[in-house]
Amino acid sequence: MLMDWHKQLLNDFQRDFPLSPRPYQDIAHRLGVSEADVLQALGEASELQTYISRIGPVIRPNYIGISTLVALSVPNEQLQTIADQISRYPEVNHNYEREHRFNLWFVVIAADAEHLNDLLEKIAQETGYHPLRLPLLHDFFIDLGFQMDLQDAG
Image (cartoon, rainbow, N blue to C red; front, top):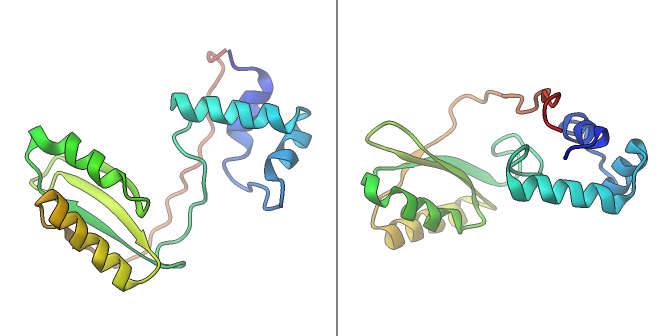
């Protein structure tokens, strides 16, 4: 059951996350609860993937390191297996299915071009599918934060 401070936690800290040595303690102080309470609530929400799927920064593409969008053409019966295989790489930000001949798309982030190229070659060798690189031509910022309507959530 979500308590009022859980709702405030999920809504108020999508942006302007405290940048400090103890950010969860700072959040707890603002919410009037303990740091352990905040960590437990975030852990449960993340584990359930009901309200949040990830906690982390959104950094402009190619601002730190190098990144690219990649597409693979994978037979539908292998899609989940290949997606799971790709997701094991820490450099893979996320992947998703698209309705297209190139039906598996994912974002790769690496320290430099050599690491990125090596990783894509490794993915090609391991999966048997050649990655199609889709480089960033125009940078668009999409605000991923949103006000969650949690009136009926608890």
